[in-house]
Image (tube, rainbow, N blue to C red; front, top):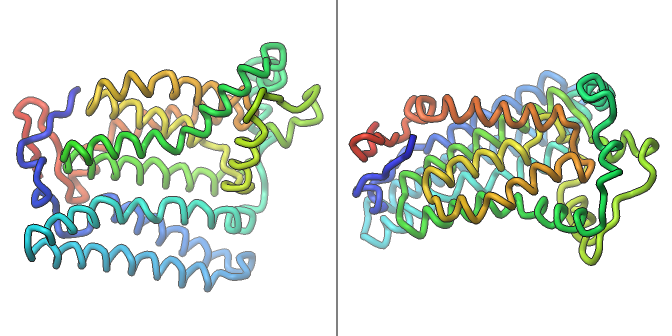
Length: 317
């Protein structure tokens, strides 16, 4: 089904003053994690810091929504400012809440599930896929896949930028909502099923480390430094978010979809080839993306967002 944006979507005043659906998703996640920190306060030494940080984050979201509402009721310039605030403030918290998982996950759920995940892979294929893939490893392939893997962070930004530049604000807000749902469901998955990945757990079974040509080691070290050891394997967020971006790129901008397609396929291939994920992580990420796509529009409407009527080409509440 193709989404068509109405003419009113091209003006910032089409946006809502209330908390956006994306902001509501983020607040729900913040409350869930804060509640978990309180429940397991005996293991989370700084649980009160988590509560304060999450309270500050919720206050930030509420203040941004309020400021956007006030700005919108002012001049045309104020309406444009409201458009920027409403469009981007939910995105700010996604990387910040990811980083706190490095501290929280080992305390909320101090058991890693790498070996159960590895055993599922083994039962499915009769081998450990990352070990079996050694026969296909080539420095050039490793280099290209590692570079593509790092571009995962730029795919959603690219689609968001295209929607924003084309003034398709309703589509942009819907896409930000999709990103919030995708990221935060995967974050909860990391809490429920912590795992550090086959490149650590199955290292003794590999004949040696992966090697590239020019930038492989630099890119890999940069990603490791930026992400930390966050136990973020199950489900594969790289698979889930890449499929979500790809799906909505096809709906909203076919030229961008075609440009993204080879990079997206390389990212998903790289999840296992580069030893970041078990195959079951990739399967779970793909299934989660399908579920999100299936329920996104009714949930978005339920949270007060505008939906797209593909037959009449109008945004409706």
